[in-house]
Length: 233
Image (cartoon, rainbow, N blue to C red; front, top):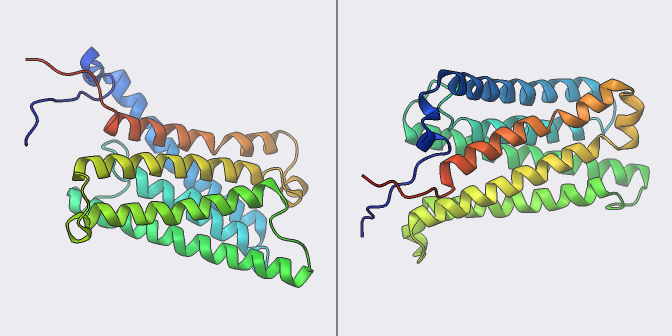
């Protein structure tokens, strides 16, 4: 049954959507989130010196998965500052699926390199907070992918929940996964490898950088899916 209830995005009821400063600040935030995600991926990849050891591929794959692909896969739905020229909703959904598939492939590859490195060095597994958080993040990513499949194939799976509710669940779970991935990336900054590579003020900058895309993603998802006050005519 169609609903006569409309929900206004954050700030729209206050007229902020028409306020040029608000629009430009939001656009600058989204563009900065893109730059931060790409920049973190490139810098971590350079610092890890891929090919020098089995472990060196682990930071590369994980940064590509979560700093780059997952960030871009979510931000491509923004109206401001998206680098993708695709305008249709269907095209953006397909790109989203591609990005999230790359997340799983890159994360699984990174996990494989880490396991192989530990086995060669005869070191124990899952003894640090970073490794535990990383395992939880990967498991949550797989569950989130299953949730996304339920959204697309809702009729074929004969799910009782309505499509809007499934999309809300998918977006909420996606936000949880992204925040968990952010905490995992930040915990990597406390590893012996990273602290031996980056020191001083640069280390603090790296520690705080992942928070910025997380805030932008959180704002985007809550604006799009969090119910607002009823709009009356």
